Structures are given as C-alpha cells and as structure tokens.
Image 1 (tube, one colour):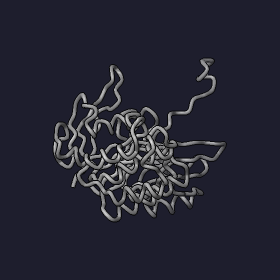
Image 2: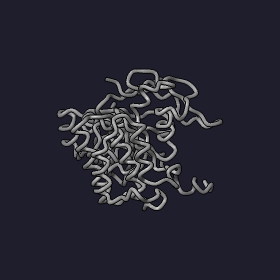
Image 3: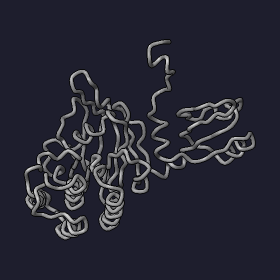
Image 4: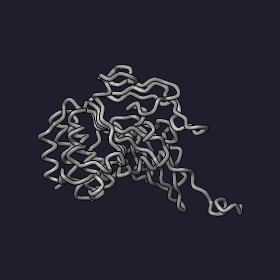
Length: 298
C-alpha cells in the first residue's frame, strides 16, 4: 500500500521556491531517511505532508486518499519536531493525557515504560525538563501514538549518544512488533544508517533520490586509480571526482558489473563501497571554489 504520494508539489514563501515540483511515492511499513542540507526543504515538506502548510500547486495523498480536510487519514499521522514551544508551560502529565485522547490507538503501556526508562517525571513542567528529556516527550508521543505514519523532524538531535542508541533500539523493536511508516529527517546519517530501509534525498527543493537501501548499497562506489583511464568509467553516473597529482578518485552511483569491476581492477583501480553519508555528500556538495574566487580577487 502507498503511505504517501506527492504529485508535482510546489511550495513558495514569497519569491523563495522551497519545494520545486516534488513527486514521489513512499510505501507503508518502511523506515525512511529524509536527507538534505540545511534549507533543502525537509521541514517544509513534512509540514505539507501533515497539512500544516498548503502547497501552492500539486497533490498530496495519504494512505491513498486526498490529505487535505480528510480527518480519517490525518488521524493516522503524527508529526513531531524539535520545536515544541507550545508545551513550555504545560505539565508532562497533561501533555501526554491530551495526546492519549487525540490518538485513538495510544499505547499507554509503552508510554509508561518509556517514562520509566528515561526517568521522566510526569509532575514536571515541560520547560523544567532537560533538552534531552524534552526531546524524549516528542519521541514518546510519536512512538505511542499508534499512527500508521510517523514523521520525526530532527527530534533526536537533543539526545546524548547513549539516549540516541536507546531510542534506535526501541524504534526497531516497536517496528518489528507492528510495522509502520516512519520518516526520519536527520543530519546524523552515519550513526542512523542501520535504521533505514529506504532513503529520500532532497536538495534545493528537488528530489534527488528515492530508493530502497539495498539498491543504494548495490550502486554506491568509490573508484580510485591513476589518471588516464577515465574512459573505463564512460557512461557511468559519476557524482564527483577529486584529483591529487596522478591519482584520481571518483564517487559513482551506478551499477558496476563483475566484468567491469575486473577490468577496472586490472587497470589499477581500487573499488570500495560508499557509505550513505559519503553518497549524500557526493550528491549534494557544491562545486569546489578557488580561494581567490571566494574573495573576489580572481
């Protein structure tokens, strides 16, 4: 089943085009990495998906139904971000009680388990909690909501390394019990790679990649060899290349057959996999500039 479908979605703020004719489909039951540099449009996209923002053009369908003014499908979606100022003067107990009445499939047992595990007092005001504990309130709501689709926008960045690892383990445990669709916007790419089944990559308001992680790994390579043999990579999708003296390094997103790999290695190339972090950098980095050009002296 299709969890989310965007068709030619555009969103502007004044003259600034934040989402530029975005189209993609996300299937149910997967954990998606939503990757993009600052300003790429990730948060705007999430706000459009949960109907907080109305696109200027295009269509968004949730669980194969029109999203806007559709209470049925919107009740199946939970969006939590790291900006929850509305909670500031409210007690944790009241925040979670309100959430439990809003989400029909609220998991009270899991909520109590998470509160105990992360040592969060329900009697405290949200504003009295540490940044990490405030972060956990958003995560608790997302996990306990029981929603078919959960959007988490950089919410885990306030957690320390140990708490983040605990969150990852709990998420995978809950996903195994009841598969849902999670979309996790993050800059912690290397650390979180093991969570993701799929990746959605956004840059300057456009979709660069929407792919299963197994496919991503099968097509992500770094080739290093002496210059002069570039013709062996003709026709391949070379994302970027670097050169130091007579040695060249190529980041590739393409299929390399066993025969092609053998030929490259016979010509002195070494071939190794690219990590998701390296692939993201290769897809989104700006062309290198000379220092003089940056300072207006060229």
